[in-house]
Image 1 (cartoon, rainbow, N blue to C red):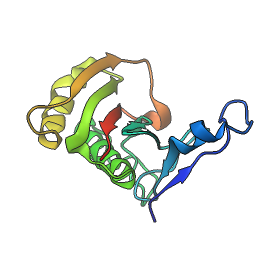
Image 2: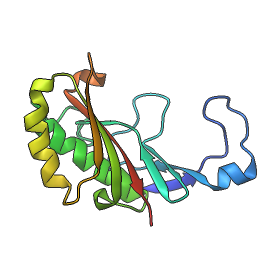
Image 3: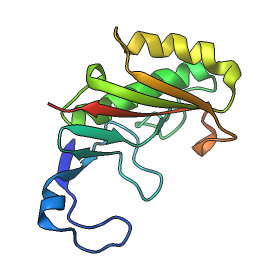
Length: 149
């Protein structure tokens, strides 16, 4: 079941946070998206903002990439982002900024075609960068910043 829980410890230092800091920051955790594959949270809600971790195209039911091509993976990435945002009490329609990471800029047009079906006008601000590699052999990873109601 999706949940947002108060994070009462500094994730880096491991020490207790001040009560004011802990009250304004909560960890978003849902089984509807892939579990974190490292020491990070799926998302953090801070006040009226949600900051997601990058999502790759893992199917949360199988733990495997949704497909070998960027089209199938981008669809799954955006389903995963939608699930994380839903657990945080918001949605793709409230996303204000994304960052897209591609291992091959030759995949830009195919990723962009899928991306456009998930974000209605006006779309969020976006940066797209090429990287040498992504976790688990993924072709695309997307992170988002959204407003929460």
